[in-house]
Each structure stands twice: as C-alpha cells, then as structure tokens.
Length: 146
Image (cartoon, rainbow, N blue to C red; front, side):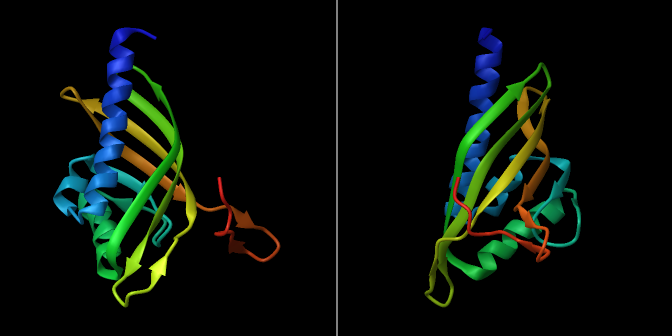
C-alpha cells in the first residue's frame, strides 16, 4: 500500500475514533466535525433520509436526550481509499445507561460510510445504518451479534 494511502486510511480511522469519543463525551460539536455540511444520512430512524449536518446532528442530539451515559463501539471496519473518495463498512453498537438508570446493551447495526477528502481532511459525506429484515414478519432483526 502506498504511503499516502496508509496515511489516508489512518486519518479516516481517526475520524471514526473521534465519533466514538464525541459520543462518549456527549460532544455534539465534535461529532459535527466528522461530516460534510451536506451529509446525506440513511439512519435507522425515520425519515428515509436525513439531509445536511443539522439533521445528522439532531439524530445524535436525540441519543443524548435518552442516554445518561453513552458507549459506541465500531467493529471490523474495512476501508477502501482512493485519492479523494473512500468508502468503508463496519458493525456498530450504541449502548449505555438511559436517563431512568436502566442499562442497555443496545443492538449491533451495519454501517456503511462514504467519505470525501476536502482540503486535506477526510469527512463523511454519506452514511447508512441498517438492521437485517425478517421478510416474513416485516420486522427488523435486532438481536444478531457479529
């Protein structure tokens, strides 16, 4: 792998780590720094798409409304990096303690990232979070482990 690709992949992994840290610290401004202004997010919550950084930030702000403490894990992150675009996929789990004191282990979801290198910084331009669908029941399957 060329040296620049290694450096770019390392920077992308640092961006994902910043998201993990910002969630743990309930740092909404820190979270915003990982995304492009025009990010398109296909999150697990309705609607079908969330357009722009304000909408993406609101999704994370909603998490802080329900959780007293937040833990976010990203596992098995695989990246493919080009000159100014990259994509990756991983498993992620949001867990912690709810405001009412109840501990929750959360659920594993599938995450896909689309990134752009803008002015030398890798930012998430698109993300998609999903759970598998049980076709017969029409319900998401939320108890799977990677």
